[in-house]
Length: 266
Image (cartoon, rainbow, N blue to C red):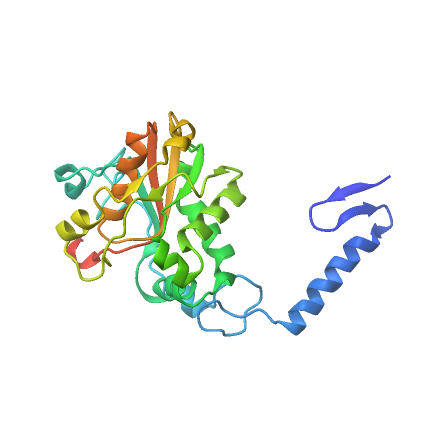
């Protein structure tokens, strides 16, 4: 009689089979050759794709209570769906936004490692965090779409960090992945240093769904992935383009959210 195990493949009544033993031996050998280290500070840790205790504590994870629309932390839970004053005064063009953590400390280091230093080894941990932070939205999603990168930035960087994150989310959840469903229609200036209004004007009309792909958007519930939400201008412009193409719903999921907790009453 043979049973199938999650990690060791086929098992006989007498114990693990040769393939299972080989995989265990290979993992042990690889840990000797490339011992697991913290993804942030490179301190030795007990497993791959992990952080040390110090760096873990340096991440300001965003947890409920949250504004249901913007995903920003709120000072207390009033029960049910809660909307922040900011969302009520200026409703975003997307339905909901969620982020893993504040854009500070070790999270900012991880974002920069992926974005600017080709550290693709962080993708597995970041993908797991994204799925956890957006689990409610994932359950109501048909397709995952990354925020597209400008062509010249793609040529310089050689990859789109949002696409890497979106592919991880799709892989972990089994959702459809459409990296070409949204395109940039023109170049934009860097958003760094711009005010909220300037950011919004900078990206206005900069995204569109290619006409040949509009049928794939119509009626779909889309999960838009980006690395960082600052003012929401970029993901807002993307959401408007997806809505124009007929998307039934657009939710936003990001690694980090620029938020000043000092401005949130305690």
